[in-house]
Amino acid sequence: MRGCACQPWGMGDPNAWYYCLTHQTAEKGVGCRGGDRMGPYPDEATARRALELARRRTEDEDEADRKWKES
Image (cartoon, rainbow, N blue to C red; front, side):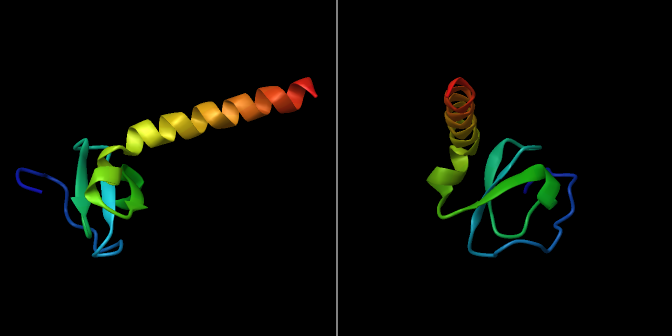
């Protein structure tokens, strides 16, 4: 976390990857506070795609809601 004003919070799996919403980057292990992170993810590549994955899940759930309301 070079150049980061955040203090490490000591929470999270030290071997897992997270996506930091503040810095818009993947972080491994202890990092910014949990409220500013998404995850954990199994690897860095998946953590980097966190916003894309969340957007896709939201779209899928919205579609499921529409189908449910129509039935």
